Image: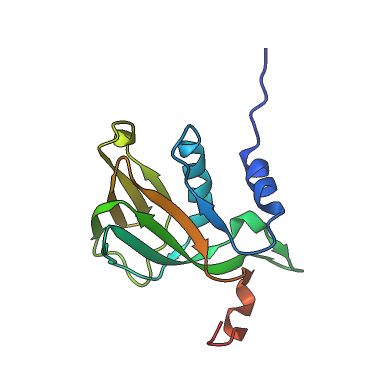
Length: 170
């Protein structure tokens, strides 16, 4: 018997298709956690880290990003495809420790490849949340029983080609 694999790309796009504005996404702490993380990793894939080496204040951290809005798909032009982008931020609470590591090969803004958590989240005392890019990693230790991870867009997504047309106040 042959089974059809679910089309996660289609599920991802359908989930956000009705959203005609900035993304606000929160990780749930139930049986959906790993699925939510996969979606969050897709939402932040290729994001540029705007605030390197941020440290926690009062158990919280905000990491500024400029992200490609993969959930909106591509805009087709005659000879190219274009993504929407948006300034955004990852907000985490329950932060106990943050460690940023870079190799000497990191130049300019780090780009985020993916994010994930370690297996200790099931132990509930504490666990690590990872932001990982080429030649860099940020490891955030979270309290196992009292944490949040949220992605909040700071603006309406816009086409990358319009980035220089935005006013400084936007």
